[in-house]
Every structure is written in structure tokens, then in C-alpha cells.
Length: 465
Image 1 (cartoon, rainbow, N blue to C red):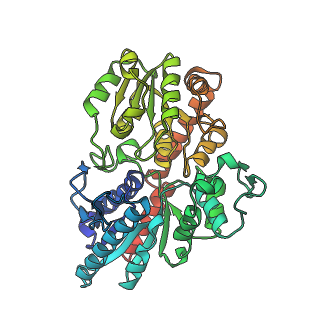
Image 2 (tube, rainbow, N blue to C red):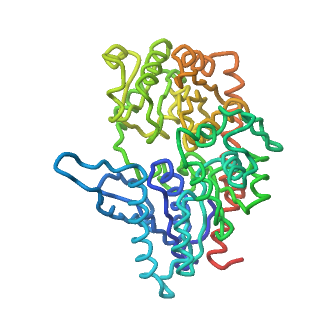
Image 3 (cartoon, rainbow, N blue to C red):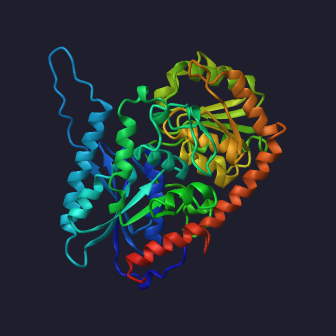
């Protein structure tokens, strides 16, 4: 992103704080790498209870600090051990990061060492309280699409009645959203009690106090949605935040995000892909957090068996027990199951012709930017909205809809795979992918919309404007 001369750059220190989840770490880390590449000193704190992170290709001026997780304070008795809830773990991580940030800010209050700005994940806006307490500037970073931001903001402002009284949402200039198109926290509050209001409040309650607001998207991808959000807050889009090798190519050796919570089966995956014909493989991955129920795992497995295509399926170790008995052995000639793999390298491989995905925002942007057709099996959070745009707005894939029992059936999985790879709509999908790939690249290239927004931020930090 731009070529600011490092030798002319004063020592500006930026701290980048992410929510502890791979899907949040990746785009914020990528943003940190861009800042480091133009000569800024950058610190990225990562919550760690052990040495469970894998690091690659990080710039010298980017420091990853391990933040120790405070001990769990749950009670133990002679008969049972209390199991820590998700909320308790969230609060423990918040406390750990809070202690770290306050100490870091105290240690850098002197003029030459002073921290100039803290970029924080929008879902942990409490960071702004600490930042402002030390008189430091703060920048909010949204890791979801502008469409999803718009929906959450409409809920926050009570412009949308929740629970939905009509089953759909209509926002001027947007596609019509049915309940199944909305983030799960909006469409099914009963399943996630209190989560929606917490998420909306966390992201928007104090947003007007942030000095900058960034989103991991690009202007041309969501023009109406971007315009709508800009009418309420000064959002600046700086995406897609993918490793530079796949877009503008200006950060040397930047071919993966650089911090992974999982160890990858890189060599076996790539060797297997090398043996397959061009555009012949279905890549299947549901990210680092989505957990499919056993019935859904079985339907997906049977759908892959029904398909005539070869497949590479990422099944995390904690999910392996949900596979049908002898599935791996029975499909050994056409499929490969791995615990984790380098997704960007896989998506950019010539043998991959389709991506079966939960439609998380990072995976969606990666597929768009690398020109791979999508079969969307949205599970929760923002994924249903992303899937809506994949099929109906950008027209780069097909969506497998859940039945009444909440499961995507094997027959429809097979149908959608075939439609993306060789169906009547396949050629249109390929044309649209070529277009979006070029548009994504243009946004990050010299003078592109995201590049200019990034440069403006850096120049303000350097006092050049």
C-alpha cells in the first residue's frame, strides 16, 4: 500500500488489538503488517495460555507480544470441577488484555516512546476506555461487511423491530432481507439470548469517540451499503486485508497472514493438489470457529460422496469424531481430509474449482479476491448475510439453504457443487469472479480506494496533513 520512505518516517508507535479469534486476528494482523511495511513501529498483543501460535513472515518492525491469560478463578469441590463458561473465558481474556494495555501505555508515556494510536477490534470497544484514559488516539476496526454493519446499526438505533414483526428488513438501496438472510443473532435471538444487544451496543455505543473507523471491505464491493454507513459515521474502507502476494504484491514474502492458532498440513495438502487436474477439486472448510453438528457433518460427507469431484476437506481435530464411520477410508481415492491447511495457498491453486464454506467474511473476501466460486453453507453470526450477497448480489456462487431441522441436505450440496463447477450458471459465476478479482486488486493497488484511505491514516499519524 503505497511507498512511503522508511528513512523519512519518524518512530510512530501503533498498537493493534484484536479479539482472540483467528477470523479477527487475520485482518487486523494484516493491517498491522501494512503499517510496519511503511516504517511505523507496531505492537500486536495476542492472548496466550501457552506457545500455541505459529509465526511466519512478520516484518522486523512488527512485534507480537504474548499476553498471559489470567488464572481461572472457578471453584473446585471434591466431587466436580466447575467448567468455565464462554462468557467467563471472554471476561478473563478482557481482564488479561486490560492489565497488559494499561502497563504498556504507562511504559510508553514519554515523548519519544509514546504510543500514537491504538487500533482496536470493534467488538472489544472497551479498549477505547483505556486508550482515552491515557490521551491516546483510537481507531475502530470492523471485521465484517458494511451490509452487516448496517443491519447491526439499524438494530442498535431501534430502526428495526426485533424480534422481526414482518420477517424481513428493507433498507433503501439494499437488497430485500428475509429472516434467513440476516445475521443469526438478529434472526434467532432465542438461540443467542442477550448477544445481539451486547454486540450492537459494544460496536456502536461509543463509536463517535473513535478518531478513525475502518472496515475490512472495499468501496466498489458494497457501494450502497458503504454510502449508507458513511451517512452515519466516517467509515473508511481499507480492504480486502489479504496477504500482499495475492493482491498488490508490495510487501515482500507476504504470502500468509503470519499468526496461526493451528498447525497446518501444508506439504501433504499441496502435494495432493499438485496431482489433480485444473479446476477439478472441491475445497471444503468451515473456518476456525464454526462447529457443525453430527447430522450436518454426515450430510456434507454424503454430499461429497455423491459428487463426482475430488475434494480436500479441512476437519479440525475436535470435529473428526463426527465423520461417518469409515468415511476417510471409503473416499481415499477421491478425497483428502486434513486437520488444517494454508487456505490462501489452496484457494490460489490451479486444481481448485470450488469452495464449500461457512461464508465467514474472511473466507468470502479470499474467494472473491482469488477468483474461486463459492458454495455457501452459512451457519451463524454474519454468515447468512454474506451468503445472500454471494448468490444474489455478487453472483459468485450458490447457497445451500437449511431445511426445517437446521441441516443442509446432501442432495442440495451435490447440486450446488455441480452448478458452480459445471452448471448453466457456472460461466456467469466465472465471469463475475474475474471482475471482482480485478476490482479487489484495484482497491489495494497504488491510488486505489483502500490504498488512499490507508495512506491518509498514515499521513495523519505522521503529521503530514
